[in-house]
Image 1 (cartoon, one colour):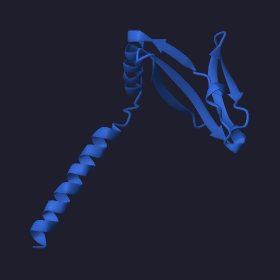
Image 2: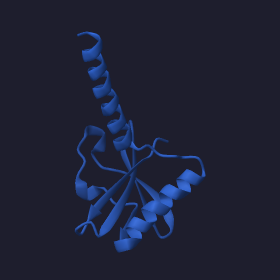
Image 3: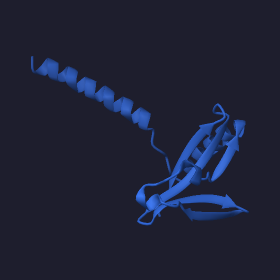
Length: 111
């Protein structure tokens, strides 16, 4: 399994929908919780790239402050078991800084 998770804010960012899905040769598989059980549904037409937004259902919907608190608690819990996560923006900023530094060094060295 190669699950993907997407967070999507709505209601002026007061609520968050969490989508859990994966792609296979058969198409897009959407995971939801129904009556306390995780249900996997193959999205109709997804094998051919014909995905309708209304066919994709959220795994979980969180409202208000619980959404922010839940996301932080989830990140903390993942960190506790060894998943440190990736700070893409921080990494990108550091790489950009290194690139500018190297350009400055080239200017000095190759004058």
